[in-house]
Structures are given as C-alpha cells and as structure tokens.
Length: 210
Image 1 (tube, helix red, strand yellow):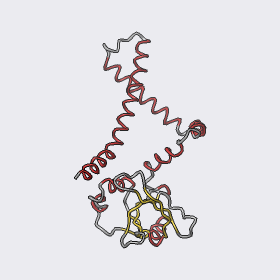
Image 2 (cartoon, rainbow, N blue to C red):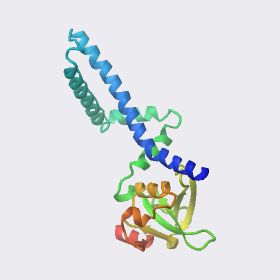
Image 3 (cartoon, one colour):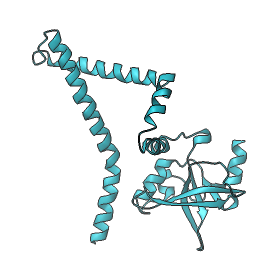
Image 4 (tube, rainbow, N blue to C red):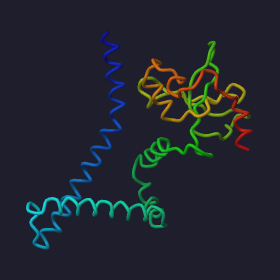
C-alpha cells in the first residue's frame, strides 16, 4: 500500500513539475518587470498606488516588449556569438540538448519517434524512443532509448537492428511521457485513442520519408 502511495505521489510530482517551473519563472519575470516599471514611474513622479491599473498595464507592455526584443535577437548573429560564450558554462550544452528534446519537432529529421522493439531475451516488445534516425556505427542498427517508469529521466540505450523496430505512428514524445507516468495503467492505445496494432516497420517508415 505504501509503495503504491509513493508511486502515485511521484506521478503527481512529475505531472505538476513543469507547471510549477512555469509559474516560478512567470513570478520571477513579473517581480523584476514590476520593479523596473515602479522605478520608471517614480522617475516621472507618478504614484503607482494611485495609478495601480496603469502601472500593471505598463508592466505588461514592458514585459511583452522585452520578450519581443529577445525573440528578435535570437534570430541574429548576436545570439550565435553569445551562445559560443555561454557554452563555456558547465552543463549548458547538456541542458540545451534536454530542452531541445522536449521541444523536438513533430516533423522532419528532428522528430522523436515512439517505437516498439523486440524484448531482449524475452518474448514481447518494449516501448522506447528514437531521438535520431541516423544509422549507428553498427550497420543497419539504430539507437533506441528505453526510459524508466514512473521516473522518466533515467533509462538505457540500445543499438537495435532495423528489422526489430516498429514505429508507433502519430505518437509523440509527450504521449510516451504520459505512458511512463501512468506506470502502464494506461496503454498507448488509450493515450492515442487508437486501435491496437497501428504500427509499421521502421524500414517502411524510412521509405515513406524518402
């Protein structure tokens, strides 16, 4: 009973963690933007208590402008040069790669594939992820990652022959995450709202992409 309670609590923690991080980040941004606009209002002799609504609207406008400027810079050479410098910070590249995984494209070469691979030494299949569809150093083999449940930030990597890989079409990284957090109480069929058996071989999938 205690183990079940702990597992359910962990599932809840990992479900709410992204929401908490977003809330904390928004709180930090709001606090700093509020301080900035308060300083500007004081400079012009405007009472923020008297004109509270105006202060809030001004803060929102300043925040949007700041995000717009950052977004504009992100597409310039300045961002590239800044990134070359920031890369020297320990773990930056690793964290960037992790963020890239979570924001992986649903199309093209960057697509994260949800796959089923033949179980190792046992009958049946395991559900895993392919973060890259580039061929391994071993001919006709591809890297498949099998994550742990309910804590998905660990797992194992395997080099799997292409004939032993089935692609779960339409499934995304987030679908696989939901599957892991459910600890198998929900099947991928439930999560995708699809009938069982909707898979194709990795070889067929590659031919479709060609």
